[in-house]
Image (tube, rainbow, N blue to C red; front, side, top):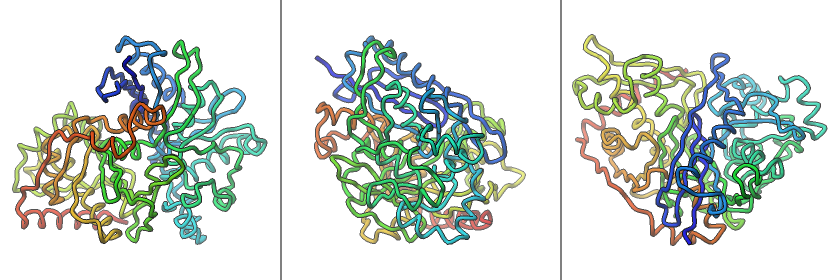
Length: 494
């Protein structure tokens, strides 16, 4: 009998459900977008019920379209947008506030205060993260301090915190399981990645009651079963990983030195560093890549806040395009004699700059600049930022060796963008046969626990490349274009 895995991929702008068979063939896909809330400048929120309802609806749709019932699903794997923060009532299951999204900057001033108090070194030493509003810790504090009665309820043990995976797990299990995995925990800024536990010093610093926190499990583990009323039968939940770590697994980057880069709303490069938690000298993040059978594999990560979001901005705010896939065609038509640079610092700049106050800018505009040149600049900006991160990683890992970038995410469907990425990196770029690598990673973690999928080293042998983009840009042109980018960024930094 064929065995099926249901992967839940809850992202920043949409929720998806993908059913795989035991050969990782996609049987069905369902996707549903949901509303983004921007109550103030720099604030980004989601309605928790939108996250839940869209997840539930896509799971049911995927089952229906596949012609399967719940009893035919061997396990569920969950992958999710990371750092996004929710708190809910343990008795009613009702959230106390909208979810504060990872992009949200409302706690930037609080982070500055903590930094001025000299706390950054301790936070980085324990968590591998930088003190920044990006992570969950200060978001938790904000909710406790700004929602009426929240702190009192939290101290009485009546509230529960979770990143999106934990919230969905709570709902899927009918409130029976309050847990997360090590990858998601490592992004909260209150988890000690070296000791694999919630850190009392950090909880005290941010004034967060320990009773709020979920149990932390391996990425491939027993996370309970779904409530029988949701799908008609209980389905085991056996895998959870944050989206970037799930992509690392889905790309089969199990050996130290392997790199994957995901291009979605933002872009995230993750380098497997094995059992060594490399302390970055270049403002990259040290994080947990995955944890299997109690063994932690670490990674270096660089975050680009705006990747596909730059294309969305061109479509939604500027009205220069009607659909995202137009940008590649326009980029091909752009005047090659114009060097136009878009620095998409809409919510600050991520690694390796970490400048939350930087704002977007366009350089090199002439009277001849139009939608084609701006489209090219938007796509090129993602590639330039990738090179920034790769150079920072090379500075932290002297033995990095020759780079081959494994890529995934919506933007990698653009051949033009992937070719420019290879050109500006001066390194090969591999696009996998299955582009849904984040969902593949979640499915693999769930199936691994159930014995459906083989150990990592055997799974890696099954990874297949769809195509490789080899660098073809003249060295002098590459150097000139990247120099122009670095100058544009310098002018943008505060």
